[in-house]
Image 1 (cartoon, rainbow, N blue to C red):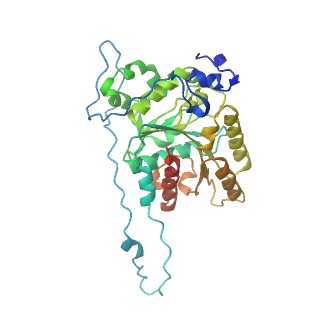
Image 2 (tube, helix red, strand yellow; image 1 turned 90 degrees about the vertical axis):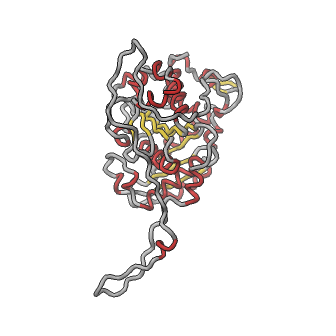
Image 3 (cartoon, rainbow, N blue to C red; image 1 turned 120 degrees about the vertical axis):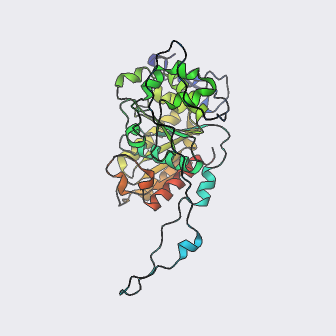
Length: 369
């Protein structure tokens, strides 16, 4: 079951063979006997210090850094502050008042982001083409969700060949990755009520503490170990400890890893930029998913159009109209100079209007879940 040969392309009225192996029907939501572990309801674990490994288990180094810092509450400026007149500088004629950036986040976006989701939700950011802001969208969406919700969000770099999410989003408190978690998976699964503390030893945290990070590994041989069963075990752990799991996926739509993730998500987020090649790749992928029996996921997906340059370009409105008809919604996020170097992503370093756009985009992603 866990070999690539078992994932054939044979399809029937109930979905393809690889869908049946995961206990899913058409659209990833149909009934039938579930063969995959069903995450139990998330419990409220009391904070406790990290515990050591069970007797007989080798101990791995644990950083001395503490848990992530508390998330600072952001208070939007009041209406009086927004309308207060600007005092002109001495000796200069009064200047016309410039429009102020919209308050961020908006109360409406906050309300949508803080809604009770009922259970843990899995969101995958997908596009088989590189350079279409999958990692950026995963990080900033997780940051917006975690900031609004006060935590409970994790971003997993599930790129099969050296993803960069761990480098761009997480703190460097240790160098552990998904490989180390897989090596100790049995021990972590057996942690019981101490599962959050054991899992935390393998996670990095965003600089502002708004979300956690499960970093990818640089060893390309790891993809052989991320078979469908292992991927589902990792997802089971993450959904038991977090309310929202954001997954930065790889580019191979035929890999068992990619297929397993897609079959397990609650929502797909199609990331692209206003370029013909990027949009064509996204459109082809949606066709591929529909042919594989995932029409319902495509219909309820959200498209994220990111601006890589200050000039939106002539294709923006056409692509926005196209993907608004093809997917559930299409959100546009503006260019921001702090993202251009491709270095560490700091949500607080974005322009106010960019942060407001990401809060709105994140709210669009969780709407209807």
